[in-house]
Image (spheres, rainbow, N blue to C red):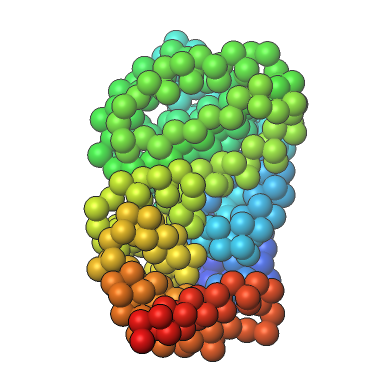
Length: 394
């Protein structure tokens, strides 16, 4: 086994070095478990060669077509900082099976009609992914612990089986237009009810989807939406929300799946802001939020200026002035060339009646404004207000 892994390592290494300027790599993976070679496509983030970061990995079945939507969507969302950059590993399955009739996917993801669980062929494919492919990718690339498995239609049912492991290797599960093996769902539900670590699960169907798939998703949602385990982060997009067909639902639902998978990574949104207002120590909440991002996704990012502003606004609404001073100092420390921290401290000094200090902070903040600020008069109002208050105090 060691010799085998070493051979794989050298194969991956040679391909990676030759393609260091590329973003997409195609290779043949010799699997001992499957006793055959499989075509794997790897999409590498643009920053990979120039950084030391680790990257979440998204594994996609039906790779010939799912990679087309995945690559663009992941790169688009990461460009805007909504999600971290990710490595995408796609497994080709839509070609003729030389052993049995039909596409390879039917044998890969097969299961027993009696038990609803993977049969001999399906077990081997699952082992190939979890025991060969994932470890090999981890040994070659700088991967984080956050891994996602994606499937569409027949392969979407198969994503559930990775939950059967005592320690699931995937933290994210995307099932788009699945037709679930219903007699195997009770076992999956029991596992989910007792999860000790967080997972993110997304399921979707199209409004003009195949009727059996629509019914299957509805039945799944009826049971799994009732799961109370806080570690089960669940989201469904039903056909009533779109007019997608069985084929078009994949690219339509994918952005929503991505947002769900990385909901704990993105900036503070409206729903989270409501929760933030209830937190007693909002600065502590912000620090813990970014520690959770690092722990869950394996990426270490600076606290965003947008999140600092959101926390300062929540603090101000609750009149927690000591915390306002703390968050203002943090903003200046992280973003010294921005006006944000100075205006936060200006508000703090103003609220406790230190108008001269407030004026100083507002003026410092004003000096940090760029030439492209359109609402500069709004910033000037704070300065004028302080000057007026100081004049009245004399």
